Image (cartoon, rainbow over all chains, first blue to last red; front, side, top):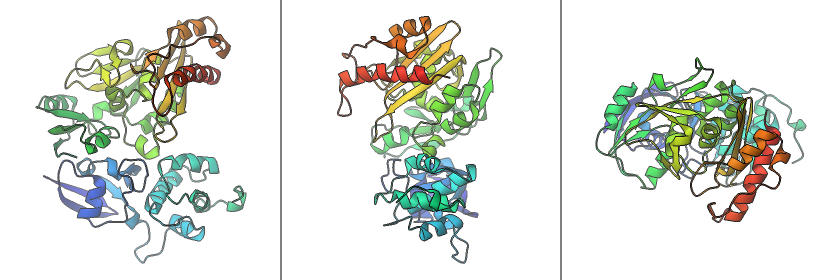
Length: 161
Length: 262
């Protein structure tokens, strides 16, 4: 067992982990941040995406010990403290970019990483960037629309539904 | 997954020392190893993370003009930082997905030598040199078969040196579920000839296609590959594609790679 300390959503967090403890488990079970979802646990579905030191990673495929000392951002830190959704979250709501919502935390975190590097992505760039995020409801079209809108572009420019 | 001790050394020397322990194993980005551990297909007593070793990070140009990439450099960093070798940067930018590319490393991929991984094709087609903590290994001597390499126990890939070809391209036909290469072909044209390396297809892992290299060295156009075929006997045959299908695909994908080489 080892002690790990990290900054999570701007606040210091620490806990005791085994070597094998995954970052997703540490976030969910030690820190009670259950917004990070574990869908496939095989690094394919992307529901567990969080940011570690500013880049998107699949937290089910990273050891908690590897994140010792890191700056971690999860879905819980996206909205303002008063609950006001951020631009991406609001766009997902406005454009019905979710059905069951299970994949949404990962979709939002992946979108945040995309828009940081590419503030005005094309539809094709969005689709390519979502390669590692699977929506089990197959609600992709509205997800694309939401991301396009979150980037400040007119969704009317996208193809037909 | 079985439990293990975790160590995170900050120098190659400390990593090598830690790997000297009983049943110790190196951890690159973990994008293959962690899923393997979850399936209990490996049970190291200690995992030695290579993610915090500054001398294994980054990309630079060597005195001989080769592109030198630290073993712990992520696919994402190669995709954005290997502009001097566009074919390699493009290859790195199509491995897995964006989040996987932020963790997976070139050294980890080459040490694992998955028969469907992309980097082995790049290393072999480029005639790269794999630098370890003890020696330098030519790519031609490094890949020994599916998941087998010339690495000794506890030896780690600290750097990879890529001669930069005049033109190159890596063409990947992805297996639609896993996104690994069903067949991937890297073509690299140097002043002294063309090298062609194929991943995903063979039971023996990545390999060079000598007949294609000879034909392309004489005439670098996709037409030069007309009529060339590969023996299906040694190809991988599984539910995703038969041996014959993969053998055929090698020719098709090689032609596409040549046509797109830049």
